[in-house]
Image (cartoon, rainbow, N blue to C red; front, side, top):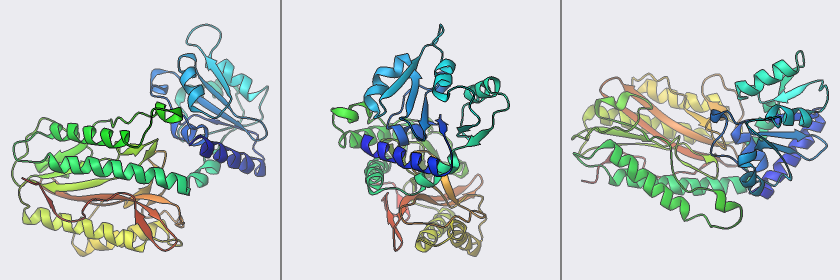
Length: 385
């Protein structure tokens, strides 16, 4: 992983030199993981920024809190790790000033994700200095995954499959939603652990699946992004699981969703779910190098219209080291698909207060079409008991 991260940084430096960019400040956790190979478990939400400074000509610099520095130094290939402290004169602002040098003529940042505390500091410290967006340089690199990255994502797909199987096994009349969430966390963590060792860089990678389970059941199935509760399942309940905030491994995030039904399925729920599956499959069937992102969405939207449904859902989004990357599979996105791009591709229908139809998988674009990164039956799924 660290050698891959180092190679990416070298490529980025080449592109910076080509565009006349001297220094860039990276503050987004996903970008730092992508380039420097490490991430923290407590960060900016506690007022403790970590930054990566990439110079087009010189070795990069990591700036991180002193309390995190021992672990960071072990997790990254970057040799120069500058530390800062919560009190006293060794502030992160001073460390950043040293890294930027005297009177920079411009500062390149991740405009869409830079924390307010750092943006405000730059505005106050360097008034009038242009802040330019380095994301336009790094973003195209992150769109195309290497074979190494795809292999990690396929391991994440196996972890997600174990999570979905556990979710399926947990379903029965009278069981509680949060019990399903516990089963998902347990199965995913155990599967992730099977891919890890306790040596080298991997000893810092936690196998623990975390975040609140996105799920809804019964008449709440039409809601989106509800969390598990103490609600008991009833016969005919649709039950929806979304793993988009949980299915990840070594910082690579996937999209993965399935809808189940307790005991049996009503006619209305069947109609919605079959339409969602058909729409997702229509989208995946047209994905290949050369097609526009919005044309993938159009294939799904044609299915919804034919079945009499309207949807506000995008058909999909690019996936990688961040939860949301570019491009997106939606009207207006004219990005041309290329081999090596990875996407979460969804089918989504809501019948407010009644039911829903949903399905989601992660795929990688190949030279001739797509390969699935996630796998679970794409059909009407009933509880096992």
